[in-house]
Amino acid sequence: MNWRHLLLRPHAKTFGYVVLALPFLWMLWALFQDTLGANPAEALSRSTGDWTLRLLCLVLAVTPLRHITRTPELIRFRRSIGLGAFFYACLHLLCYAWFDQGFEFDEIAKDLVKRPFIWLGMLGFVFMLPLALTSSNAAVRWLGGKRWQILHRLVYLLPAFALLHFYWMRAGKNNFAEVYVYAAVFLVWLFARLWVAKRQPNKKAPVV
Image (cartoon, rainbow, N blue to C red; front, side):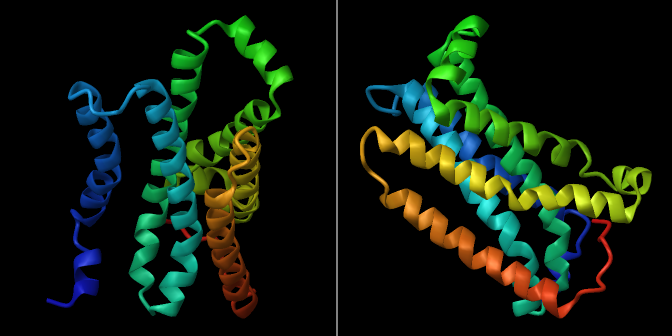
C-alpha cells in the first residue's frame, strides 16, 4: 500500500496523538521508576520545555515539508502537533507553578518581576492559548477563514518567545549551545514557510 494512503486512513490521526503522547508516558514511567536523576522536578521541567520547543519546530515544518515532499496529506497532522506543543507547554507551566513555587501565586507574581525569562515564558503561553482554543473546524467557521488565518499568524511569534525564554534561562549558566541549535532549526523552517507563502499568495486558510 502507498504510504501516502496510510496518512489518509481514519485512524492515522489517532496514531499521531499516541506518538505525541509517548514522551509524556516516558516521563511518567521514569518518575515512577525513580530514574530522573537527583532532581526529578528539574528534569521534568526541562523535558516538558524541550518537547514544547521540538513540537513548535515541527509545526513550522509541516507546511514546507508537504510542498517539498509533495505530500499534501501531512496537513492533517498540523493541528495535532500544535495541540501537542500546547499540551507540553501546559505541563511545563505546571512544573514551574507546582515544583518551583508550590502554587504560591504571590511568589509567582514576584518571580515574574524578578526574572525576565519567567514573564516571557508566561507571555508565550498566553499567545499560544487562543491558537489552541481556536484549532477546531468549528472555530474556523465561527471566525471566518480570513480572521482565523490572521489570528493563527501568531504562531510565528511563538518561536521568538520560546527562544528568548530559553536564552535568558540559560544565561545564568552561560550555556547557549542548544539555544543556537533550536534557533537555526526555527529559522530554516520559518524561511521555508515564507518561501511557500510567496509561491502561493492567494492560498486560503485551510480547514484541517
